[in-house]
Image 1 (cartoon, rainbow, N blue to C red):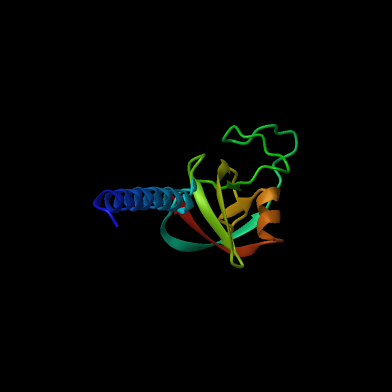
Image 2: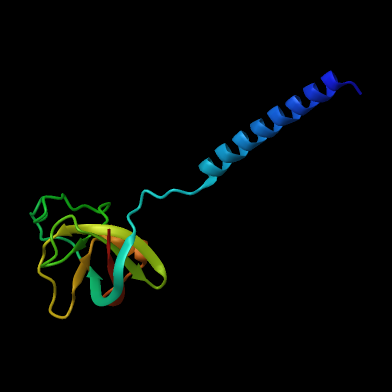
Length: 134
């Protein structure tokens, strides 16, 4: 083997190695899952919640949201409109937000929109877990 061919071979192998490293870095960068969801914040709290439908004749909630059968959210008498929460029932978690400032039934903390109640399979008054999202 001549010196020139050994140098060419080493250069070719180095180039192949650099390309392999570049491809591996690109793939690992793109395969890392990134989530646009906000992270949970703080501890889980327990509360009573039940599905609700807004008062008849009311077109918008106290938060300015038109509540229909597709809106996923909660009503709470104190939390500000738009506050994001994770709600969990029987192991299923949903990221949602306060969409109404309705007064709940005494003893109940949250009212769930029909869509959120369907997602969580909540029927009647149930004990849920909830926590804030960052």
